[in-house]
Image (cartoon, rainbow, N blue to C red; front, side, top):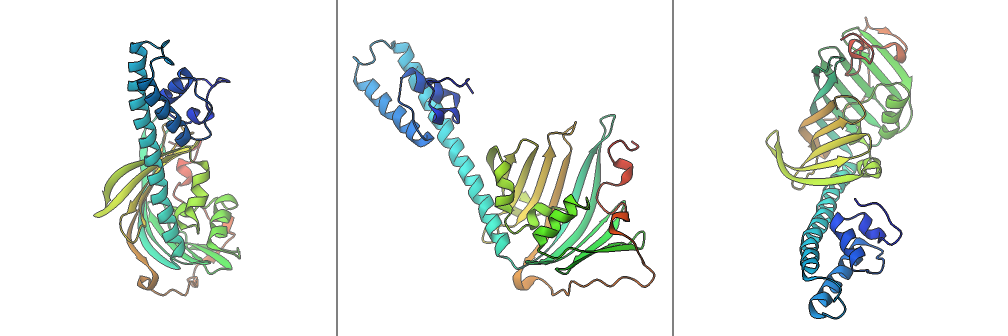
Length: 316
């Protein structure tokens, strides 16, 4: 992108390089939008081809170059804007669909990539299932190489049970699933797998920080035809594959860190998607085994996807 100058059109600055050059070379008035800028350039180019006097100072070579740049630039701009709008529309449709479902259940497989101090990439894999009833009930399980845990939330109390250690903790967190996700992540540092996709308005939560959007066409996840979208923020890149058709649910979600050396990824692949009446009934109640010991929730260790041995500064 060219450096900003006082005589540049602000609409061009968010556009392709070619538009800024053409707009400045033809001395066009400022435009308030990319669409208006395109109209100005097209109108001026038509006049250029029909009026030799006004553009006598512009050589034939320059005119040809402007025409070529105009063709390339407009194609780039219009295509990019259409691509971005389509991607956002597809993601918004998924968000609206998820918000409308009062009951959801699915299985999932996750991969958390760890980059060691000597730049070796390691994948920590786990699987589980999630059932939720909006706005305030959820049951989630996760079984991996380092932990076997179950979390149950009934709208008032969160119960977290570590089956390997036979320990459980409980804490009052009255409120919605959205509130629970925030509390687990920020206060207790125990994020729910793929928690972004469980929120009541995924679009409004994720879009504000997006700086680049792409529609990458189709892909197939678990035999399901999907729309493949890619988004960038200042801190992470993320991709999502959304099932095509009347039920646009997320099939795969991949996050790539831009702030951690090596760009490690976290991925969630979703299967056995059910919604509405397809979801089996659940009381969302927790009953601890008689021999299980209750501890403070903060004292439950190795219940998330990154065990202590792989923590920052831990052993290789």
